[in-house]
Length: 252
Length: 325
Ligand SMILES: Nc1ncnc2c1ncn2[C@@H]1O[C@H](COP(=O)(O)OP(=O)(O)OP(=O)(O)O)[C@@H](O)[C@H]1O
Ligand SMILES: [Mg+2]
Image (cartoon, rainbow over all chains, first blue to last red; front, side, top):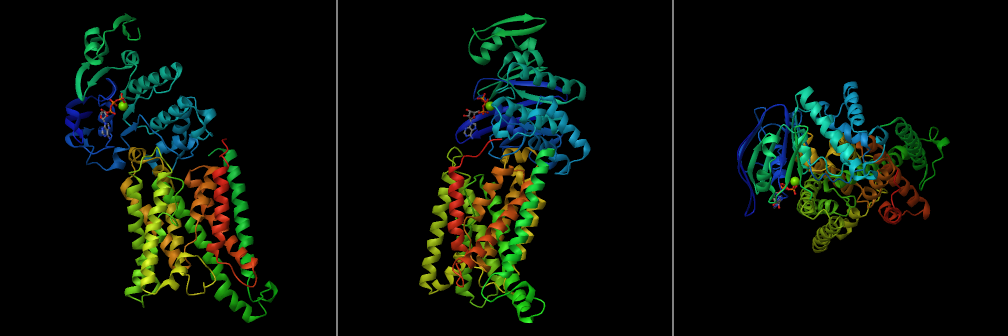
């Protein structure tokens, strides 16, 4: 369980997050949605202890994120950042194998190799495994980064806009893989999405952030209504229901 | 690593090892004072020369070369910029300042004490450099090396001024321009501490590779980023300080060697670190041998040789675009 209590964040004079409290139960997919600059990435990076907690507290499985040794947390929580830029020349397989680092501290067992191969296969990277990351296309690179987070095999997975640069096929593949590990392995996934329909189709719960506050929270079928969407995004959109899934026609 | 890549790297390994072995033997034979290998065991004087001078000199070149290349690699990892090295970005200059101050106030200090002072000063100077470098916008990668040059230049100028005031200028060139001709048995052994640093770097190679992915990725993978930063700084500072104290600084090794290895083999340090060390040793030993041969029987200091050879390699690196696999 991820428990966020009264978390606030400010950069200089600007208040980024206002007294956020949120509990995310173990197992299942929670989608974070909201306009640009709402504070989604900030909240995620606080949960993943990438920046210091200024006010409030956050626990993951009962561990305080700002008081638990980093290496212990890395075994229960993995994060994929929105903008992972790096200049290292690593091969895809090398990058993905660093996902196993928290478990063996660099020593890879046959089980680790199996997990690495499986992650590569899952994101169709086997043929690209020996290519340097810098030579990949944007979407291929994104897949490699997601594969690395997957290889970490943590109970909690935080993904900040993982669908960036992915084509429709791989976007669907990724969401289905997430669904599978949530259902079969009981993983807890928190994912920032801009594609509201992906959230509607695959998430168990949608939490909407706007200007640093939670403005809506609920199951997709309850939350994806014209009225709520207008309140979150500031414009009117039609919502149809197809096969019991709400579909938002936000593009016309 | 794939099978093809593993084969490739084992072939490169053989070539590097063989080259180093040939240079090693060659370095033992070259210099003023003849030493045909056949004489070694019949002529006691030749053996003495070998043990007192040639062998220490050769070992010093290998240790300094390997060390400086590794120090350059780690410095580039810490600064997250490929174009910095200890010789220019303030580490060497801070070390010089450290020894200068010790020489001023404790003229009788031992080599070990001087090395300690130089290491401490280098640590301080490099930390300051890194703190500033991390504040520079990553969108402008050339700001970091540029800032390093200015920073190193300012400290270097302060060192020169102090040395001039204190009438110690003749010492200064000993520290600023690498030269192996003074290396004798009993005067170079501290460099083995540098070798220890290289071994430590090898032990933490995976962590260093992760560090190169940035702070967030490191924390995400459970690395103690701050502690790794301290360890990296220590390795860079100790290696640089030792080479300043024992033989004088040698430019470009820390810059060109890691860049070449990265282009050829990538940045997974578990695989590339031995090659960085071996290539550094080959480059420095090769330049030292060349310096002994060009104006025989006079010698050109290795620092000067490396200034030319290393500079040329660097220009070649800049103008030759990396080939994408
Ligand atoms: N380091 C920083 N310094 C100052 N302001 C910051 C900093 N990081 C983020 N902000 C501000 O905090 C707010 C929230 O940013 P955040 O990245 O969390 O938004 P987001 O919801 O992830 O947006 P997006 O959908 O565009 O990714 C923004 O207004 C942003 O300008
Ligand atoms: Mg964001």
